[in-house]
Each structure stands twice: as structure tokens, then as C-alpha cells.
Image (cartoon, rainbow, N blue to C red):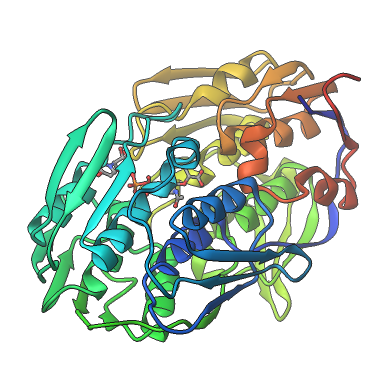
Length: 424
Ligand code: EPZ
């Protein structure tokens, strides 16, 4: 098992960093490539991440041709001809995001079988909203032996009101509705930039999706779809992670090609703290002086609120800003595990249900820490940059799901960081 070793303390990040295509956009985009029965789909700006390889294998398992040209960051998919309707357990069980192939397979074949995604460390993550929406469109859903089986001669347009603006459920239902008979409306839909990116691809494929980015989506069903070419939207969470890294280290970093509009809630909080964030032609620049920063209160919310996927990284920033900051995690029920590990580095914090109080600015010491999920891994590495001494972060399989060459990008900005394989 690889480890990342950081010599922390006086790190000051300076320079430019490039970011990749968004993990949370490319996974549903790959699911959408199942829908066309004519032509091929080419996705560009595809990040080289373990989750992408997993989703490629899920789609391949449906007897669809998938070619990933890593050198060009390009995936070409050919879903012409009959596709299978059972998603391969060995890959689906590895990545809960695979559940978004359920809607497209069902829409295409009238029958789909996908294994029930497990929970994960950050929460139980049920899929009731996905299933309720498909049932509203006329699907018959059975859950037996850990599998979900959905059948529908042809899905029918429906008016769906989401109890919660679930990202995955919005994506699944939007894709299912593209080939349904009639019109589907989805109210209280998720509004994340990755939803807009998916709607853009679906419309290029001949679908008719309007309202993406707002809480009300309308999808007019079409009879068939064709392949298209699409470039994956930039990863706002990777960009945000480097913005926080710069803020924590008295840095001056330009995050190239970062999209201001996609990071407004994070930028607003960084500015409230006293971090200088400016929009430049080439991207977003972050300049920080820790002596001038003050504690803040942050509450995670569905977009356009503060993103839960930036919560762990932002608590690492709160840990180095003098005073008491508060983080309230409203989206997932168990997403503070990184704080337990950071406590081993000297972090002084109390957690009470969805609220963490962080007494920042106290000295932190390097330690051997374990990452529990993707964003927690990033947060621990960032904390290692500012803690005195050596920090060793293990279980990097989480990190590799969502960050490409993370340690190399930090080293290039000035961090003293290296990755060693487990047995050394
Ligand atoms: C997506 O997960 C992202 N993953 C997550 O990013 C992100 O944290 C999350 O959206 C919220 O922004 C991908 O896009 C691949 P949800 P998703 O459905 O779709 C509850 C990362 O670090 N819920 O919006 O699974 C659920 O329990 C990952 O990149 C139901 O109750 O998120 C959770 O509390 C982590 N019933 C909340 O909604 C449902 O049917 C948000 O879940 C579905 C969800």
C-alpha cells in the first residue's frame, strides 16, 4: 500500500497549478453514453482516476465498446447494437456512483439489474429517491438478493418532486426521462454544475432537457439518441482543494482554468476569512497571509450552498486560523472522521452531531494518519503541510479515486512531499 510522506511546518505554496476534468461530472457522463443507438460518443478532458477506470468497466460490462486514450484524456464509446441489461457486480460493488447506469439501461432496454450500492464511511447513502422517481415513470422495482431489478415496457413522463435535491437521483432520473414517452418534470432537482454538464451532453445527443442548474428540470422524451462529442467540465472540488492549500500556507497560487462561477460559495467563505481571491484571465488566484485571517462559520448545503465535498479540506484551513471556527455538515451524517485523525496531530476540536467546533491556530505536529474517504485524504495531506515534522498518510486508494498526481502538483508548488510504495 502506497504512502504519502510530508515534511511540514514552513510550507509556502507558490506558482501555478492545472486542474483536471471533474470526477463527479465524468461518471454520469459515461453512464449517458449508454443511451445513443446511433454514432459514437467522444468525451474529452477525462481525468485519469481510478473511478473512471471503474465506470469504464461498468459500461464495458454491458457489451458496449469503451476505449480510453489516456494520453489524450479521451474516452470513445460505441453503444450501437444490443446492450446487456445487467451491470457487472464486481465493478458496481466497488463504486456507489455506478447506480446512475440504472436509469439509462432501463430507458434503453426496458429492463435493468444493478447491484444495490453499499453505504460508505461518510453515510448510509440510500437510493430511495432514485427508485421513487423511476416508479413514478412507470418502472416496476424489485430489490432481491442485493440487486435492484427495474422493468418498464416504456417509461412514461411524470411530474416528480424530490424530497431532497439528490445529485445522483437527479442524474439518474434526467437520463431515464430522455427516452420516456412524454414529458417529465423534476422539481427540487439538484443544481450542481455537474448536472448542467450532463444536460449539455444529453442535449448534444438529441435529448430535450431544459432548466439544468435550476431546481426545476423539464425533459421531453425522444425516440432515440445519437453519439456526440463533449469536453468534461473542470473539477471545481480539485480547484477548491488547491485554493484552500494556498490559503493554509501563506501562499500565492494561480489555479489555472478554474471556473469562478462554480466556486462562488467557497470563494465567498475564503474572502470572509480574509483570503485574497481574484479572477484572472488564466484562472483564479489565491493569496493568503495567515496572520490576517479570522475564524468563520460554514454550513454545507446542496449547490449553490457551500459544497460538502469541500468540508474536510476547509476544516484543515480552520485548524490553522487562530480562533474558534464552526463547521456544520448538513448533507452527510458521518463526514467528520478526518477530524479524529487530525486530533492525533494536535487539533483541538469538539464534534456534536452535525457541528464541529475547531479551535484553530494551535501548533500541530506531524503524525501517521489513516484516510477514511476521498476528501478526508486530501484534508490530511494539506494538514501535514502545515504541521511541524513528518506526516505519513496511508490508504491512498481513497485519494486516487478523485485526485490525479495530487502530491506531484503540491510538490511543484513547493511542498516537501513524496509518495512511496508500501513496502519501503
Ligand atoms: C454526489 O454523490 C457526489 N458523487 C458526492 O461526491 C457528493 O458529496 C454528493 O453528490 C453531494 O454533493 C458523485 O457525483 C459521484 P446525493 P450522491 O444523492 O449523488 C441523501 C466526492 O467526494 N440521499 O446528492 O450520492 C444521501 O444519503 C463524493 O466526490 C437520500 O436520502 O449524493 C445524502 O445524505 C462524495 N436518498 C444526500 O442525500 C437518495 O435516494 C446527498 O446525496 C439519494 C440521496
